[in-house]
Length: 137
Length: 141
Image (cartoon, rainbow over all chains, first blue to last red; front, side, top):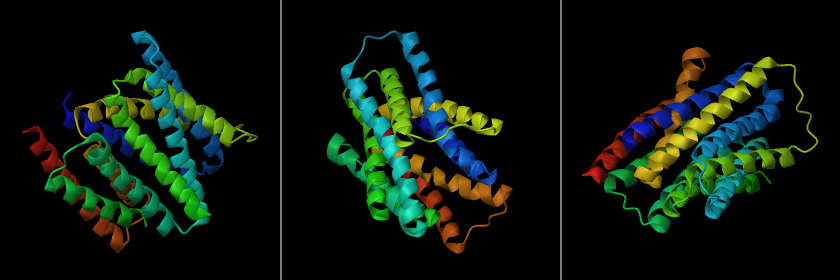
């Protein structure tokens, strides 16, 4: 699959996740949030274990460290945004979290990984951050 | 205190985003990275919610949890493959723009019509996606 196809598929799946999150609230399942989050990571672990077991690759230490950092980042992001939204005004917390992390990762591309972004890309990232700020307020 | 949590969230999501490209640069086994990502996160949630009663009578909660987990696994696997072929800076921006979808779905299904600022956000999202699409096309040339 090409980069565009993979990204489009990922875009659609991410959208599905966000719609499901919205549905959880609409269906009055907020009380079951902890169980849903735990199930999400546990079921993900199950599929990831099967996927890794099929390959039977040798244990790779950097993969453990990177994976653990990503897992902690995922939970810290989720817990932090939930708590921030509860303690700070939503019109501040959501744009700050989503716009901020988006810009930092966009910045990490050229700074850490020497990615070259063209003028269209830079304009797209800046306008995208502005769009997320407006949508999340 | 809310701002401290916001900073924690920004750092967390940034670390998550950066690790996609880092796993590629360190030539990691992507299957193992995904396994350790989900397993670490599951343990972290158990520690965070220590003492929480996870018991529920809602079958729907189980259905949602299993659906979330399955779609998250497929999504992370696909996105990791995409980042290996492209740039994290533009890929991450495009994925974050999925915020447009719940706004549209909320209007269509739950009749929550967007405020004027949301319409501007929706228009800017389309512009950003078009610009990033042009940038991706130019990078391949």
